[in-house]
Image 1 (tube, rainbow, N blue to C red):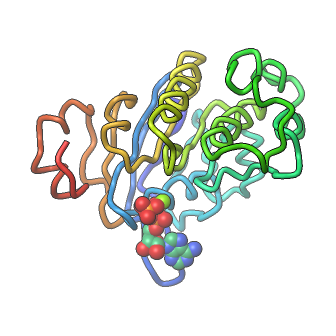
Image 2: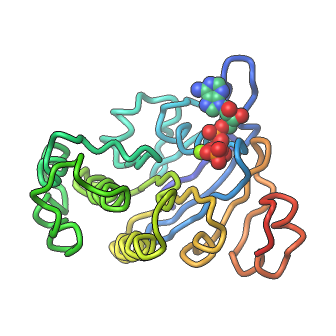
Length: 232
Ligand SMILES: Nc1ncnc2c1ncn2[C@@H]1O[C@H](COP(=O)(O)OP(=O)(O)OP(=O)(O)O)[C@@H](O)[C@H]1O
Ligand SMILES: [Mg+2]
């Protein structure tokens, strides 16, 4: 098991946001986290990353409890976070955006990432500021690769992207999965999440209210209506 989240409780001040959340993600697996606005999806991945450290519970990375460690240490240990804001440096080229995050001894350097993703290669010399939202998203995913992660946490990568671009992002995720990464995908787009996820968790008010295969959700319109406000 790559990543095991065991009964974490996370607070924002006095607000008890995550109330005993548990999840498991294997290498080579893509797990979706679904839920309405404010359900605690981003908080869950921030808790793993150390950006919203849990007050109790465990976050086990290949068996080691990393809960509460600082984010840069968690990153060094092999978890990569691609925030919804993408975080591309606008004054650097796409190549430089990858280059500055390269890690010695990583399986992929910037060139390796460009070789694997031809679409990224096309934008290699362009500045971050001249990339579209979709291109920035692809670059942000590529950038996470050069840090040599075993686990990638993605927060709503499809947000605001045209359908053809979402397709390209999905292709990237499938490639990473085939490379043996464990991928956690926070997603509001239910159909997308069901298409790419091996398993999904639904969060509601900081608790896991469903865990299972996406196909079970397709078969249960009441569940999706109750917790996602949509029909699958
Ligand atoms: N830094 C913070 N301080 C206080 N409250 C916060 C903070 N970050 C998030 N919250 C609150 O915690 C709740 C859960 O937020 P979270 O970002 O995890 O939701 P989410 O499921 O990712 O929602 P969305 O779909 O809108 O991204 C929300 O009510 C939010 O307002
Ligand atoms: Mg969020």
